[in-house]
Length: 225
Image (cartoon, rainbow, N blue to C red):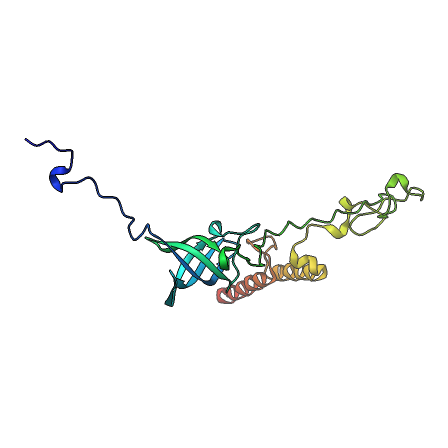
């Protein structure tokens, strides 16, 4: 019985040397930058020559900033001539090493990613003298004698802001024209007295509803009579 190593009975030799598949073979090419996003750090190269042979139409080769041979901020300028090695992967053609013409460094783009705008600083409020209201000194540095206290709302010396009659909690309609609100209230009271009902009766005391209640009371009296 002949002795043989493993695998000799099925071909009479050792394991054949592994050859790189089409997705692992490295090729060289040249072309120009089609576009490059400096903020995201990637783009595409239009390959016009592969292994010294022209490529028509040009093929797109993915390029990442980590594959660029250059100093400082790594990027490519649109239209820049480059030489590179690439491979074919499941996603397509990907560059492995990108240089300028003749193997020199890439020139790169002049663009830089825009950083976040710094937050706007609020202007500090100036120091105010509580005695005279000046903005260039404090009360202890004021050269004027003690001034009478004023209302911070209307600048009156007769009362403080807590007792200010001009800063009452008024509704938007009455705060615009107080005379109009008083006239409307007087009209509603007159119409309510004509209809024989109190102005406090009912959920609302607006002039329109008071007029409707008065008209309804007159119609009811006519039908009763």
